[in-house]
Image 1 (tube, helix red, strand yellow):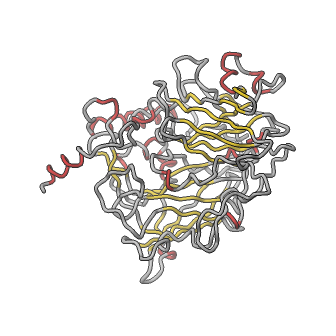
Image 2 (cartoon, each protein chain N blue to C red; image 1 turned 120 degrees about the vertical axis):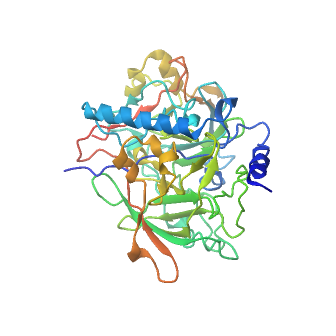
Image 3 (tube, each protein chain N blue to C red; image 1 turned 90 degrees about the horizontal axis):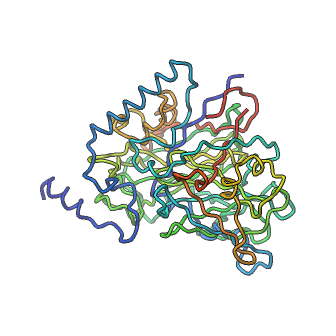
Length: 284
Length: 190
């Protein structure tokens, strides 16, 4: 089969009937958008942000929810500004707690969940979860999920024609320790194609879900790998307008964390928003 | 002191379904609990279409108004690693529910004591940063947030009682009509 045939075959893969397709369909029913157009939109957004900051507006830590290059955001962001809650009794200033019964000792090793070992480059990902005052977030739940080494998710709606790995599901969880540390053993995920636009590929990433001591500290993010050539093409990575903020989503390769003849080590420290304590910057 | 800059948020994406939801995530109390109420609704996008890949999280006070929570929401069997089910005694206060193919979700819980609302966190494909809102089980005169809102928008936070013990809370992520779009919340960090 030629590459063109393979592409045609993939385009013909049916999407589950009666469902809104996942991220891998061109939006709006029109022909697929070109990468050049998406890239131009990203550059335009970043330049506009840089001008606003140069004019004195505050730097932003997070993406705006209406980031046009990510087409799925168009109908899924509020038009009204959020209403600020200043109630010191707000329920959201507390949050759920988790404990040793909520995880098992093997849950943070994604390479040991099946009879055999998964294919791919074995890695260790470790880091600390801190609040903005630098205090460790202790005993809290960290959850991850990811594609396998071929870039395929173990999800029935992922129709990327890359092989599933019977020895890899791609889900892990653990609790942070007394210093806020977490560790996962897994394999490096592959790049992942989607249908935001023609020839759209996500940089390799691991999804992270984190809790703080307050519900307002909730964070869902994605960890990326250093030097990925796909960064500049990706509307989700680039939805964060600030270059330094984007860098905070990229793990660092740490040779001291690599284990001889076993695994490569990456460090990914995570800082959660709020709650109010000692800093003075305004909220997003 | 200079605050550490936070790690940016990214969308939960389309494929969290085998990772984040768990059996009984929407049952803070078991079926048949004499004091259980149901809270349910749809999530809609800006075209009025149901959102089938949203994930809702709930945090609330226990019936006595306690906000300490309890571990045991997603207990695991240490022998098999399988889900062992929520702590049958302690009220953990936390729920997590994905929307179904119709964009619908259901939570079975107890009425919170003290603050008369459930805190809601919305995640979805297409949503780059989660959204907070609140589900009030009744219009609460004197509530500082509700009182601060335009009456038309205030209604988006009231989970009215459809039938005894059954409350409806629809979430509209976007609407051209400001009165229709759900009020979302921001919590200052200073």
